[in-house]
Length: 429
Image (cartoon, rainbow, N blue to C red; front, side, top):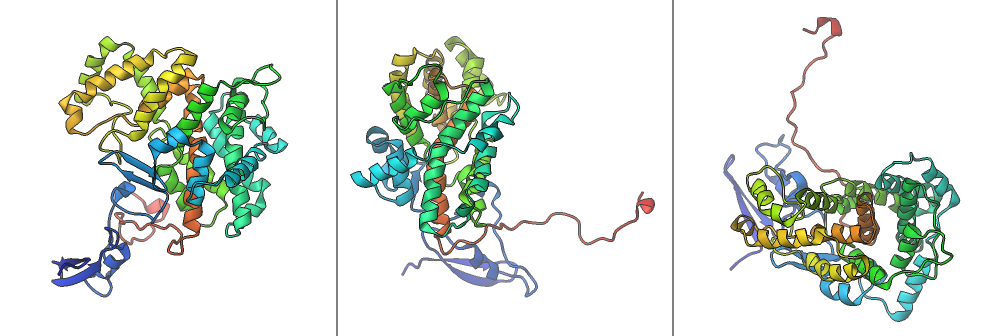
């Protein structure tokens, strides 16, 4: 009769061990019993980049990379993008269920009325150099919020925790927009509580001298969908940073700042900017075949193709392709979209990419849309951070309520010199 166990024979000693299998995994600590001698520390697994290590159990996001499936709390991303809003999706991620009408109204109200930031935060932003990167400003100001709300350290008080969740989701767009306005030398545009979450963000970004900013509903909805698509994505680099910092019981502001700092890296939040720069480098459709050949020779990379998890078409990329034309009806067609579409067509007909299962991911089209909407490339990771805040907070809350979790403290394989004695400076060769 089959058993849910793994039998391991250690050929060094001849001993055999039976290790339980749960949820398709074994516990790493069960390997510790495998020793050569009593003085031996015990067997460890070595997994650079966590390529095959489950860091936690989670009920938030499910990805089937083989079939291109993405679910938030069981709901297909396609349905949420079509029927939901970002704030409703944020509620779903954090609380596990879609809200009732009254719950949603309360949720939206509380977030809307926490969008304003302390005037001293404005002074803090003013202290940055005029050409400071907006993402650097965002990371710093999010961390600074910790000093304005010291009660946030009471992370196990549900009411205190909820208030910080409202504040963070509400204030991220404000901080982001203020960082952008500072970088271009424009006065800050304050939040407008009459507008939607994404409408208010567009107001704070692009309002000029008009008394009331008029939001284009197509762009407002497109940005809402893009935020939904980026709201969470399992245990990626920034989410892992959120959980690692959160495991020390740090408050959610500094944990979010750490996550945003991880997102700042070009291998994570800067991917759609890299796609845009690649398309601009290609320049025209007739130059695509030559670029493809350079990729196949290993001289350059095809940005926006392939994913650590997805081995088929990223479902988020399909949705973005659909909303691109709606945006271009308002903004005018971004000429880079024609290069992108032709690049995708050629690549997906080439055995080199098909055999390697390299398909467009969410970053391949998102930057083109952001650019068409008027966002500079420096704001791309900032937009990502706004959207991902809900997912980070959902993951953080799940972590601190998980009784199995401990402070993150991975092991290492020491490869340095053995014990040696200090040599005085004058005696060194």
